[in-house]
Image: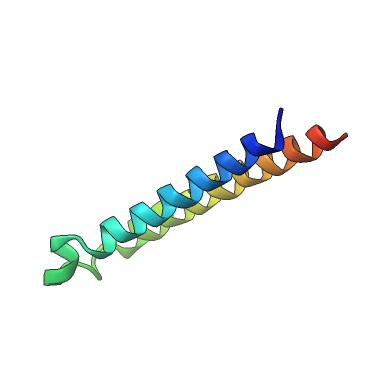
Length: 71
């Protein structure tokens, strides 16, 4: 595969992350404030941790694919 494919995949992931962050940050619920924000924090930590685990795993797979393409 071409190196430009990896640049494209990386760029799409970055743009999706940016879009998701802005979407949450500027949501109406976030602007008005959420009174229940500090409730059920355990569930939120599990969800956030799972997002990071998935992102790290996908990042490592992309790194391995990139290194294998160089060999």
